[in-house]
Amino acid sequence: MNGSLLTQAAPKATRSDVPELSEAEAIRLAQSGDERGFERIYRLHSQRVYALCFRMMRGNAAEAEELTQESFLQLFRKIGTFRSESAFSTWLHRFIPQDRHFPERISILHMVASVGL
Image (cartoon, rainbow, N blue to C red; front, top):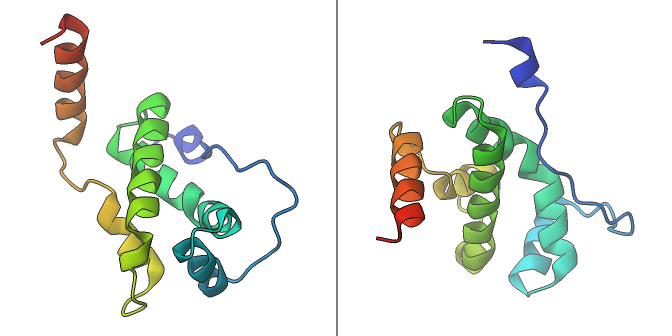
């Protein structure tokens, strides 16, 4: 694998006023709808999620960013279902598509969308 592929980074949250919450506290805040919890979760996990998506998208940064965003949107919609029965990172991976044919399906969906079907 090309070394430059490993240096790709997820877009980082930019707010500097987010306190350094523990993961557990961030989860509790996010489950109660607090934006600070969501932001902390994103800061803690976005680079790892992006790196996985980048590999899945075979080095396509734009697709990896889109997939990362979709994964976190799903996570934020489902955060209330996390019950601490497993590691949060394990639970988070549920929201990253694991289908190895996902890039091809994305391409097909983009083609269909572009012709208006």
